[in-house]
Image (tube, rainbow, N blue to C red; front, side, top):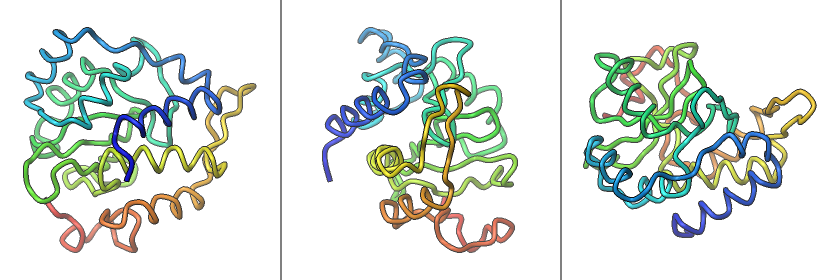
Length: 199
């Protein structure tokens, strides 16, 4: 697998080409001291996570960026607010919110266990609330899935409507191929969490 910095460079290029309107809703990274202040506040030491936020500090304030089907990258400030004010008591404290569309949130597993670094889906409409489900095997495989989804036209941005059109069936095939450990892409019943919940 390519290293995280190479993958982020590919993501940057693919968003500029296929989704430039939403790309420009992402803000520049914070300076090194502020970045490390937030990393310490989140109690995270992970190269992939740090590389992601050294690329962009998420969406600009009062903007919604449709980067993928689950929304756009959260700023570190928003991530901390969500963790402290919204997810408190809903999910285990080991998760860090990284991407959201308002109703669904992708969470980074910051627990140094066998599932460390895996990405989980917290979804109100799909009922993955108290028990988020593994969705991407890592930040790397999430980025690979996003890039392939644009290349394979599973994501097509409509500049006139300013909306990201999503081919769910294509994305499922791409995600399943790249995220073999994640339960979301396998057959499962959301109500029988005992069969798929791994925390």
